[in-house]
Length: 123
Image (cartoon, rainbow, N blue to C red; front, top):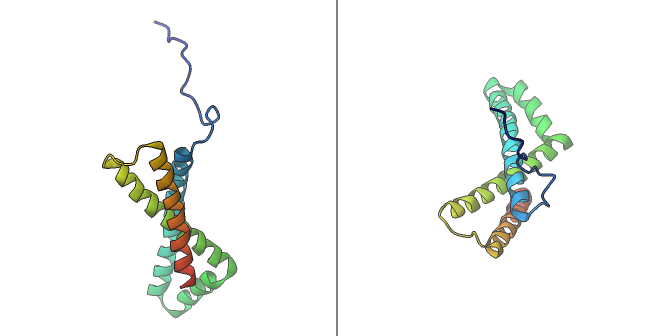
């Protein structure tokens, strides 16, 4: 029996980006950045365990401009992922599905991300 020629599921190119879809994609992307950043944390811990010479190399990298940029991005992604994860837990509990609530909670996540990142880097 031949397979019927049905349309495929719509792709991202078909739909206009919505607030919730953009934040969901960001949630996934930040999860990947956090996982990649965990490799740097592992490198730092290994250097700490290996002694002064190895630790000095890692410390010098994280104190450099590229190292600070990577740490800042990792911090930003961690706070966003944490905040949006809490938002998803609230949704799992059955709350906040109204469009206005979803928009407001997304704005709260972005605001908390900015505030927590600023506090972590400026305090």
